[in-house]
Image 1 (tube, rainbow, N blue to C red):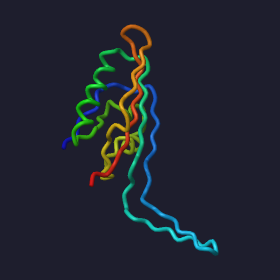
Image 2 (cartoon, helix red, strand yellow):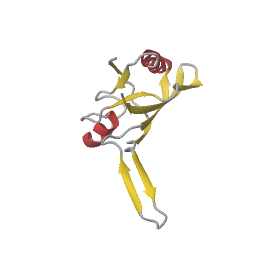
Image 3 (cartoon, rainbow, N blue to C red):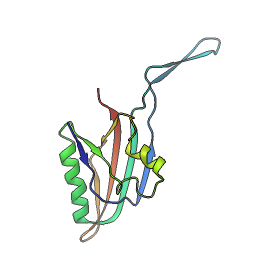
Image 4 (cartoon, helix red, strand yellow):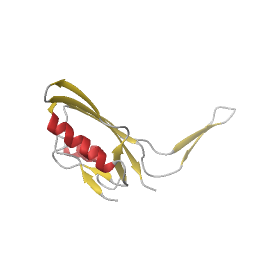
Length: 133
């Protein structure tokens, strides 16, 4: 179980959802609501990365990362030249899930590779960050 660095390929687009806290709302017959918080950490954060018109060699690096991380208990780590490129430092820390969140990025599904023309592809990655139990 170890962190595996994501390849140094800059995304052309990304979307990030910070995940949620384990909360359940109970609504009484009179409409009063009680909220139960079952933990103090977020889970199931989502990160979608798009890599448009990259070389097939860079697409292969992403697939190699997928093959290394998925069958093991490893997870993905990001560096300063990665998925958070272009974001402010404070936002980049959320995207990378640093600072004690305890979340670890893994692939939610296999990367999708679409050939654009010979030697050039578009890759879409869907990642999910979970707490390890």
